[in-house]
Length: 330
Image (cartoon, rainbow, N blue to C red; front, side, top):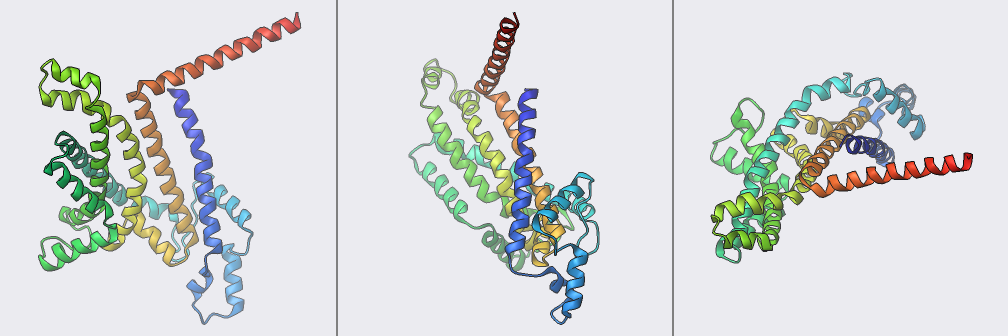
């Protein structure tokens, strides 16, 4: 298992580096000049050139990428062009809001999606199944930003039940969490239903029912346990999608999280903010995928057996090489 974790950690390095370079490349080819954003359109060419040289924008892209990595190694994410504050400090200050939003949204998605999928599977080809899947398809098809605006209009403006923006109280989190999680509730429900329908048709489930075991025990103790294995991977991939949804939700509901900080950096062409935020988000997503892989290896015995066979094969190959070397020396 330690070897498995080590290999996954090593795989994270090229992924994060690749994402960081792609972001820098996109910033390079996207129209817009941070110097003009800071000085305004009336600035003289001399002042623009001096500011670009001061910010290092005239350096080749590879030089800027290496400088960014060198700063990261030393724990420095640069200084924001707009606020003149260290990017790392601002990200650390805003990250808890994003983690709360994404974490609770993920918990809500799993807590509602799995029971809904089980319910639909156990009532297959009935109006209950069709109704649950119709609702799921409706919310899966609903864009996050549009659904968030509908919630603001209905519950915030018309009914005045919940705050429109800000995080002054726990009620302020209700609309952002609902807007972020509801589409993913539908995704997990559909995946759970599909897996459950495949599992409950297996021979051991039919045998368990034939032995007279209670229906609830067969479904939740035997069928659901095996149906959850593929869903673990879906939940891990959903974390990245939830982060993407949180970027939009934080802007609409005025949550001062990492998503709003990233969008502000994109709007103001603030390169250190964009690079630092994307780097941090990619590391977070990679760590979540690592945790999912470890959990998947623990839950699914086939992954552990494959790892054990590979380790045994490596040891056997090493022993053969050592024996051949001894024969040659003799």
